[in-house]
Image 1 (cartoon, rainbow, N blue to C red):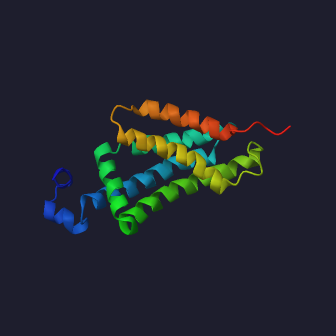
Image 2: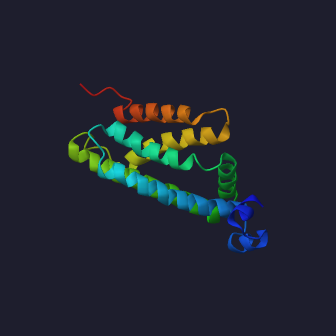
Length: 171
């Protein structure tokens, strides 16, 4: 009802385009993903000299873009993705894959500066910081008491750990 009213459409007309509320939300997720990728491109093109700061800056772009999307609508979208893995779930994961591809592109830019180990595969390397981001974003969605700035701080701290590595360098 609210979405149809805001779009100035009859509810029936809205459902001609989108069969369910999760489908509507998925359309918004696609649009927001495009927005995040567009804003993130500036970070990829000019990552700066600090790899951890570059990765955190890109994940900040994602956090800033997606946090403006209502938490309840996110919850419905994720629930729809989980109950329809072949349809909404595949579409939802495809959007995440686009974001991880951009993070991968950023990591591919960084080794040229000598900042990253030549052994660090950018594909797996992208998955690890993205996992930190998505874990904290899910915590944000699951708990209304978690503030966005707390999520941002936790993501930055986690990215610092990931980028420094967990093991001491070999002697």
